[in-house]
Image (cartoon, rainbow, N blue to C red; front, side, top):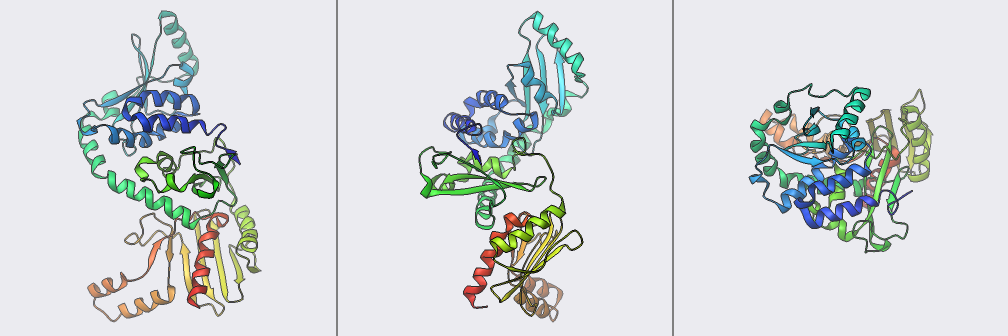
Length: 399
């Protein structure tokens, strides 16, 4: 367990500053962030988080610059930014600056600037740059900031803002409802008080979470109902997690093999689905076959990481529900590719009926098929919650 009132909890102080003061603390926030982050990519990933606050506190449509200036006080901090940047520049009179320009994250380029403090500092820095072999002025500044379309990018960003917040809310709630943190890590207060508002106690705590697909580890943050239900656009930690901020510097960096995932999944089926395994997954077999409650057959295919299919069947092998990661049904699911076929029997019936109709009516009829987002991950130790919930619903229907 990682305790949020130790290292990670420092981020909450930064977020509180931002939420209370908004745009005015933009560079102050970034200074704090630079000090507590390991890489430039990590630092700039936070842009969407405080970008939303800038829009909330300031009319960004009147923003009159092609880029944002963010001062970096120490050269060591500047170097970790420069290593990941889109371009680095040197001006003998003014100093160094690095450009980040992922406009999907934020519509204005970000310039991280280290200013020379005096002549001696300038000479020392030039020597360090030479020893680090850091390339400067190798790319065109104007191209990187793309000033010609900045106003258009801002306009488009503002147009899609509401939908971004709606998607964030839906995604977060989907993760809470459908996934588990078994086999993951929890960021929580030692005293069971919400780490966001620092007030509400453990009886009101719920989990929000995300998955590191490389390590196969899910990280969950425990927050109170008030912070969770508050408007998503004001909850910066949810925004932070939605963009799958990489906490792997805190985790051990080792990718799970498919064989390991299968071995773990065999245990999950027994322990958390209370199922009797008829055939385990192994290095030669990608599917677990098991029986639950003496009335359902499970076939859980784990072909490779993010390529899976979980099927709930009757004992005589009639498909009832299927979760899978096939990259289709984009007309029905928002968070591609993970989705659920909620009623396979009804789905097959609709398909048969559609064969008797014209092309146009057939397409309309097939739209009745019940396929929804699953919010799953491809790791059974996290996904089993959704399977368990579906089995309980089938029981309640008397199937």
